[in-house]
Length: 149
Length: 41
Image 1 (cartoon, chains in turn red, orange):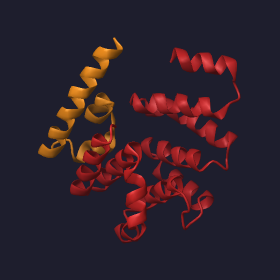
Image 2 (spheres, chains in turn purple, brown; image 1 turned 90 degrees about the horizontal axis):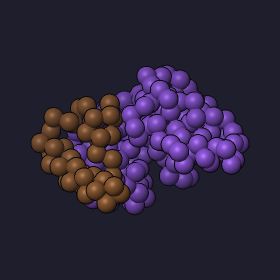
Image 3 (cartoon, chains in turn purple, orange; image 1 turned 180 degrees about the vertical axis):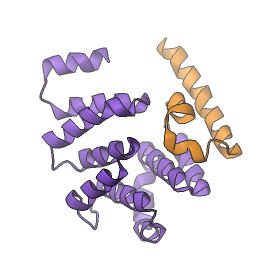
């Protein structure tokens, strides 16, 4: 936190600092505290696909799934052309429990791209767990951990 | 490597925390977590 506070003093309007602050709260389990910085980062850079994902996710983690779903429908274009948008659409289908659309989204290219990133693998594992897809969740979690999560 | 997040904080993992495979995976994470904390300290 000391490093983040120092960054804020140096460059208070840099949205990346809000993102880092939000991630810090998120990975310390302080999901309520992560809301404001992650929403601020998204508001400052509304074109950022990464920040759209994190806004959607933190709303979901704070029991605001309807708001998250509405945001994704309004501001995230389909079909996805990048991995952040893919993850965001993945979350959208998880929220609705739409396993058919999830199946269509999980192309070999999708799987290959997200397995390169342990954090993405972890997020997919967590979302599958939420959906009750235990085997898929555990398989993605193992991959995330083997990748160094 | 964030053992507390996986073991305790993330509410989405509640559905798998009771699984044997999850516990085996978390044991690996815990070992690495302890090693890293030792190095950082």
